[in-house]
Amino acid sequence: MASCWISEMDALPFDKEGNKPPDNYRMLNPTLPSQVVTFTPGTSAQSAAFAATTKLIAVMHDHSAPATVLTGSNPTALAGSHAVKNGEVVFIKVTGGEKIAVR
Image 1 (cartoon, rainbow, N blue to C red):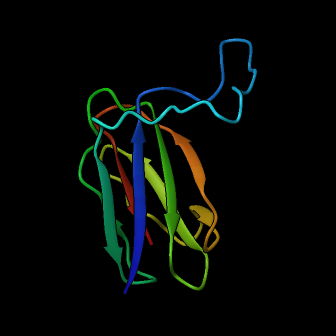
Image 2: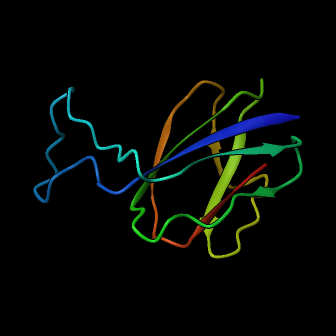
């Protein structure tokens, strides 16, 4: 078994002109939930739906091999879905109510 941590954010990390915010900029809103999805490598597992105000998620996992992820209303992560390396933090733009699947 492996774990995937998902942090939900209500702000995007770049402004309208595509400029990155300063390093000390905090976009995390502590009122938004965080989730841990437990998954068996090779088998897709789904999160709960994101909060309605969620615009961005940060994803990382602890499996020794890359995990694959897919977002959507009822996603199933496949071998060809986006790969996330162990220890890597990936930011994914989402819409409130969507879910993430991890494999």
